[in-house]
Image 1 (cartoon, rainbow, N blue to C red):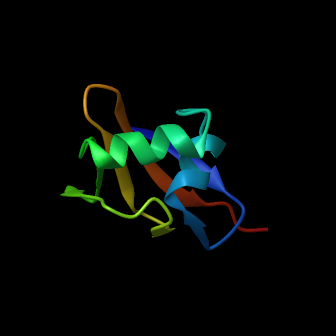
Image 2: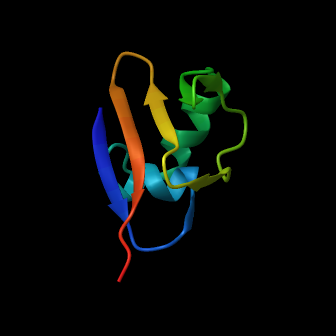
Length: 73
């Protein structure tokens, strides 16, 4: 699992996946959610704008997993 640092206390799922360089667009996120390929903390996610917090783990089936880490100032 790769840890991805973010500068905010919360970040939307679609923004996080673009920030991490995992996906290029919100459209890709939407399609993967429709196909139930994205899990947050082990549960299938249905909202692409789901707010993620420090410690949350995002997994895309057959691609990998990433953990949200808040980078404090």
